[in-house]
Image 1: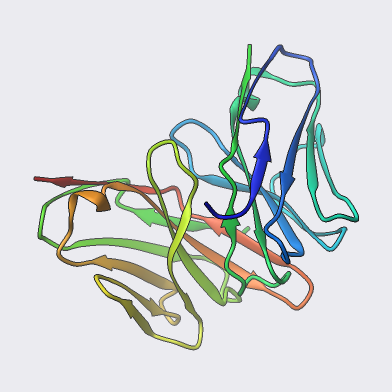
Image 2: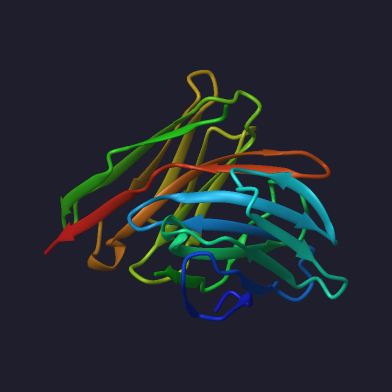
Length: 114
Length: 114
């Protein structure tokens, strides 16, 4: 157990809908990262937050947005869902914001868009 | 843009033999190179990492080498065991004081034959 929690574990929804994925970082970690992993694909970095502020952006679609709250939990919002958005979404946390900090991954949320 | 290439995509070795996975990166500013292991249905977990000021690092049966001139780094697993079967991801990261951006390779599915 990495100490990072994600809810829900599974999510099934229809195209065009909007969902919110939630992540709670390890105690003491200030940075949260979001990743998308499609079937048999690698990990695509989406976005990073540090202490409530956006710090780095990867290949995140405009239909997706995220935020980190004062209690440091983070939410990833996916809207106008398409079939291709079906994937495993991981969040990870680290102590610091720089890349030299080990990232601890949560168990992931499996999103299925039908 | 930044890119990390990983080879091979699949690798099958006899139990007890060594396995080598290779990655190249494009951004010469990259300064942190973690390796993650992802077992089927589970979260990625850091198994070893190396920073740009080091050429080699070893942890029991696992070692990583880095050649900054060639922008190339490799994972070496010796005396492979069945529990080494998993997907392995390399990554290259650029760390700044306020942000980090990490690019993952496409993964190598390692199978250990009994």
